[in-house]
Amino acid sequence: MAKPIFNFAHICENASITSDGRVNILGIFTSIIASSKLFVYGPFSVVFNFTPGDKNPHELKILIRSLSNEDIFNFDDKIGPATDDNSALGYILNIRRVKLEEEGEHFIVFYVDNNLIHKLSFNFIVKTK
Picture 1 (cartoon, rainbow, N blue to C red):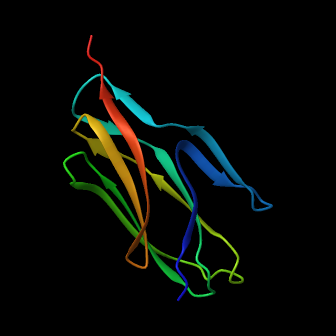
Picture 2: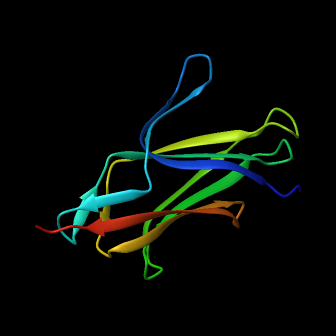
């Protein structure tokens, strides 16, 4: 089995696929700003794209991990197969809400077939008046 190649990942307000297969990504962000430490955020989207290097189906796992290394969101799905060895596979995960309690850097962690392929960071910032 070939090693998957990471292409891109984004956290955004919304993402969709057009009728002709193009990805629309709206409102890419790297920080979530809230007025209290306990905050439920959503909805938002996570867009992920990689080249698996083969024509097999793959297991996809996406986690949101807090600053203290706690998994606060966990998602599993099957993806593929790709049409050929050089074709990319993309995935849009629409998240309704996630509870954020720790201020600081968080990670969205992407696994393909139980292998870490990418970590995307975002900051949770609390600004009180």
